[in-house]
Amino acid sequence: MDRRSRPIRACRLLAARDCGPEVPPGLVVSVAWRLDGAGKIIGGLLPHGHPHGGPRGKRILHGEGVWAAEMYPCDRKITEELDLVEPGPAARPARIVVHGPEHDIVGYVDQPRLPADRFARATTGLRRDARQIRIRAAERIWWLRATKVFGVRVIREDGVGVYQTRGLHAVFSEDADHLDVSVVLLTLASIPSSAYAPILGF
Image (cartoon, rainbow, N blue to C red; front, side):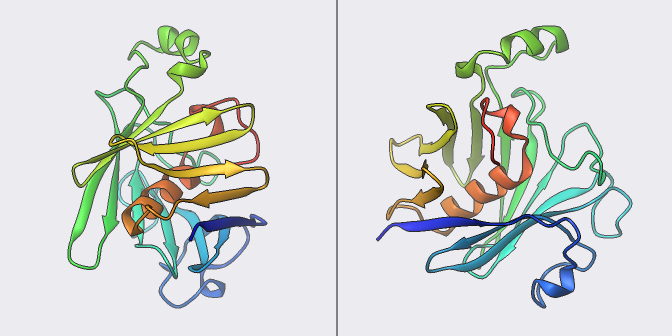
């Protein structure tokens, strides 16, 4: 059965203590979903300077029906003003860590078709086909792509579609497992919409 994700209104002032006892202290919540069959899931940030944020800060995914996960930026510090992670080219990927039940799963998020040069990146990035996010973890590869005007679709490299938007709903396929759901939601909660398409609403 498909799992549908309904957005919950984002609230940057929501305190971590209001989101459950397992949420890291000091988390600034930026987005939340209600995932049918999995409960409430939130994304937020531990900015630069936070004792658990690391030297550059990090983005956090937490919830009832996902594995907790973190995204670390490559070259820009996370602050409350600049709190999203812009995935760079393959030479400078953002790092993700998914805390699975048996061990941590380390992966990377990048845009392999974008050149490293800033000017070339700005012009190349205007093309929709260049705005594709690649996620690599646990010997899997996912591609996050734009669909139509406002849509998003995620396909594993083996051809399995694991996520797509349908109107105001987002749907995970029955083939999506905890790792699929965790890396997709972490990525969508952590990167600006302009990084993957001219999409509004995320």
